[in-house]
Image (tube, rainbow, N blue to C red):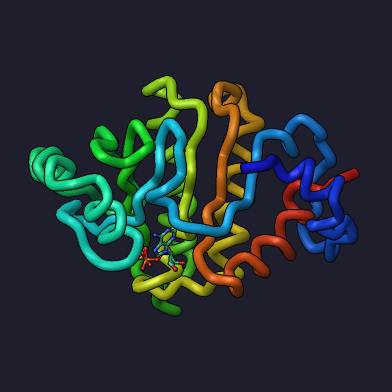
Length: 205
Ligand code: ADP
């Protein structure tokens, strides 16, 4: 899985971003972020993030895939956790996954009422997941596109929140120990959205 610096070098990411947000160019950050299309249960990293629900007892989408691949011991450990609030995160082992840990985070169920609150909760998912990673000396974290499946958060808005929150965290003192964040997308559409927005948040120069 290559860092986005190589995406720019190979013209996979186009360097002319729409100047809506436009964060500062920082070459070091381009080595710390990746975009990968595929199955998050196959990604060999310190931790994969699970888009869980408040029960932490499994569900559909990426949650179902992670539990199926990790095996029943993941369910047993999750049962001991007594659920998790929206916007918060909890960590378990990865069991049969190639990833050593799973960080379970609970995204908001989208609705156009309380937009502001939903956005804060989604940002909090990314932030609390990365905080847990740092606390557990996890250096490489893979995120799915939280809340954008069954929980129907609009993909463009959700991707902006993901990119903004990750950038802010990994360039903060607290996030300095995170060496790599991998955004894992499943669909072509989601991949296109990430490809179009990454240059705004991680400009090539
Ligand atoms: P939520 O309930 O938070 O909306 P979902 O699991 O329904 O979570 O969807 C989150 C995102 O994960 C969606 O973009 C979906 O396409 C994607 N997804 C589903 N299965 C996988 C997988 N195995 N690996 C990576 N992403 C996946």
